[in-house]
Amino acid sequence: MTAPAAGLPDTRAVPDGRRAPEVPRVGIVVITRNRRERLLGTLERVTRLPEEPPVVVVDNGSSDGTADAVRARFPAVRVLTPGRNLGAVGRTYGAAALDTPLVAFSDDDSWWEPGALARAAEVFAAHPRLGLAAASTLVGTDAAADPLNAVLAASPLGREPDLPGPSVLGFLGCAAVARRDAFLEAGGYHPVLHFGAEETLLAMDLEARGWGVAYCPALVARHEPDGAGGAPRPGRTARVRRNALLTAWLRRPLRHALAHTLRLALDGRTDPEARLALNEAVRRLPAALARRRLLPGLVERRVRTLEMTS
Image 1: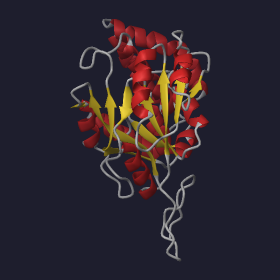
Image 2 (image 1 turned 135 degrees about the vertical axis):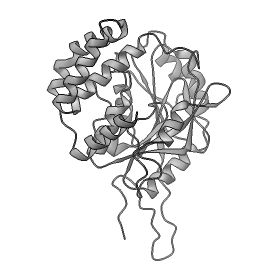
Image 3 (image 1 turned 180 degrees about the horizontal axis):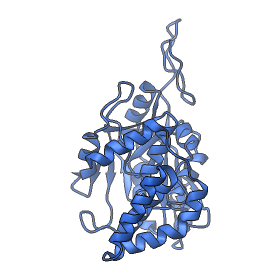
Image 4 (image 1 turned 120 degrees about the vertical axis):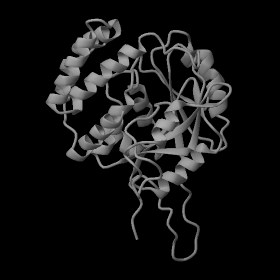
């Protein structure tokens, strides 16, 4: 009989007929910065979930009294104040503070549908190699399907027999559940990237360690960003392009990183966003090179498969 994954209780049947332990509980990490009222509204939802998850809020250097407001209104919520904007690393900071085997991530404008976390616990217990599950996301007050859902469902990586859905190398950071041990083993979110498509590198690092990353549409998250359906936040496009280049230098073969750099430089001759992305990447490049570690061959081939079909 196969042993359960590390960090999860044994949910197998026991010989004497006693009930097996409950499936693992899920904790929630919420990151925020200077969005106190949005955060308080989100906490009203997540603290009322039937799963009663422990909640950790990481305040990324707010100046609007966020931490004090949360402590006053939600005394059961643990608030962490690192004193500066950690970016996506705030999620790693929060996951390390939890003791639940699974961690669900939210932002101050996203939350989980009732029952989603219970389903996540069952999915992870049934799939020991699953390191991270990308949820289906409903956007805005009309709960429209996020276009990313269809992209993940049609992943060219296919479906592996020991995973609950299509294998993916990307996901939405505020709509994902991770096996805490796997997430921390992979290093969590990379500090060089801060924000902007930082999820891709984490998915690569999980797969490099043998963990699976899969799309699980049965897990549903809600997302109500400011200006839903409108233009992205100012500067986001440049950050995404910057981080795509930095990810290449962090994990991809030299020829790929050089080619990516050249393409962005050529684009920058006429595109201000590309020029900004390249300039910001160059400033962070020494830190990226110091942490450079090539992907295993199998994972590199999977990344190329995605590139060829995108």
